[in-house]
Length: 386
Image 1: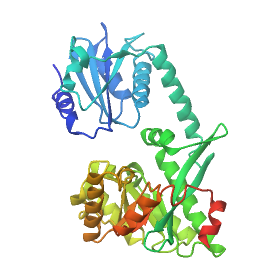
Image 2: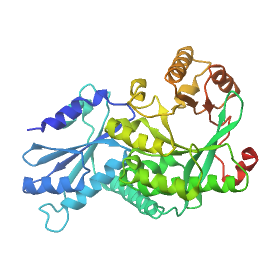
Image 3: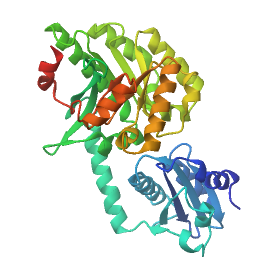
Image 4: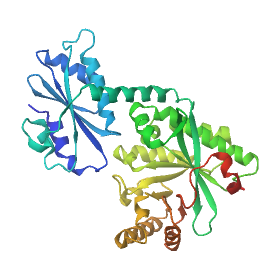
């Protein structure tokens, strides 16, 4: 009989964001002892993944909030190893996987044989093994960067639209691998999944603040702030506030110089806990900005519960500005609401003069994007920092 939690979770998938990746693993336990198979599966999956027995020797695991589809392959690989390990009742476990779309009329159909177009199970075969092995190699290489090895920072300008003044730079991490710079979209989700985001994020914070201090030591960037992205996992990691305090003390960059940007994903957890941590950061003189606003789960109603200084609108709002009347109306209204509750507005993805001028006329505070300036190495920004 299906576990109620699994059915409820599947039934509620249509209410989640369409960008979320959700997967299912199905394991055929054969004649093995069900209780031992279930225990080994639980040991291999992530905390929070839902396990259910769906037949005499069949198990299903629901894996929500996957950062990337290949995360499901990594979980399948761990399950396979656990079930084929020493003393296991299974020598060659049959594992299948499927990805669930929130738009499916009935996602629970994946749990039943003969479910027609909703039945999209794939056997965890040699091809998927190869992809999983490639992910493992990437993870192993990424682990070697945890102390900053092969990581570099690029800095993207943020300008004050009313004056054109360079107001801040946002620190963006890149990974030097095999002679090329790898963008964050290709490795940050893996860092989140593995927990490596905590040491990597700690390195980014210290390196970026040190760079700002170095600029100021030679008379540059006196009135320029620094923005650093912090993941929910990093924010909630024990000792993060003390870590920030130590970096500020060691670099001496001063109150009000650092802005920490968090995404709306922090609201998926305990808003009150997040609020207390953010307030502690503000007590240190750190500014708080909500990044990628409008793409996740929160709304403007949450902002009054969090000690926030600024809201950064996602680039999807900028793309149709001036050409899409409805989108332009939405941007106008959102910027007005942000200002009405006393917060600063920042818009990313500004790529044209028209977008720049329209946002300036709307009274938007800060902007960044290719029209303003692309991410650059520290030495390449010297002229703008004078």
